[in-house]
Amino acid sequence: MENNLSVLDSDIVKVDKYEPHKIANGKNEVTFFVASDKVDLADLQRYRIQAQTDYLIAINGTGKDLACLKLADNVITCLPHEIEIVMFAFKSLVLNDSFMGFEWNDIRSAIHKRKHVQFIQGFATDKNYVANACDKLIAKLPTIKSDFFLKAVMVSTFADDSFGFDQMACITERLQENLNIDPANIFYQLYWFEEFDYWQKEEQGCCICMFLVYADKEDDIEPVTIEQNIPKKTLETTQIAGNPIREYLKRQQHNKKS
Image (cartoon, rainbow, N blue to C red; front, side, top):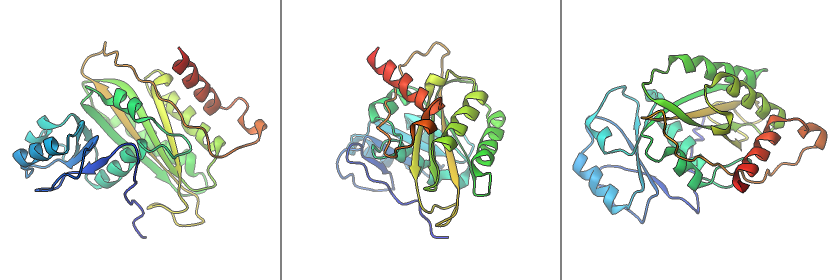
């Protein structure tokens, strides 16, 4: 299948990837680099300064404690084959044109001075694809070993264009049941794609990408306030009533006012 994980562009936040000897083209709010023992630390630091990078984020698929990780503001741990989708999913978080999206300032609050981030994903394309994607994601939670304290969870869901409120409600309910964190600190985003790496056009499918953000200290009180964009799809009132998504949006609006 054709690779559909193309680069997303944001008019608000610039996210770029470091490559050896790369020349910066303006300011980067976020610069990714792929962690390895071959990273030239001096060249990475040069690019960081040249690009005026606010957050230098390492993507570590090695499972090793590498020297280059000491330069990073944040380290996203993932499996080796997940590096590309980690960059795609994180960059999608900062865009403001999704059905549900984050403000960059709110993402910055979530990751600021919280170096350790774990990435996991679950995807499915069969008849019960939402439930099965949730099952795959939740099954990975007990395998995460961390000496740090979970403080925020950012969830980016990519789905076919038949995906709606009921399916999103299923995801929010399942995750809230299985994450040991205040639901107010679990934040959601949804993008529709006719086709994706995991499904073709006219197929049903979804990919749930999760970033678990950890703090070094239990009493970390860094504020996390996510504002959601106005939904672009309008559903009947009867479909929305009592839906956890509606309650989530109402709660975020209340947090904003207070």
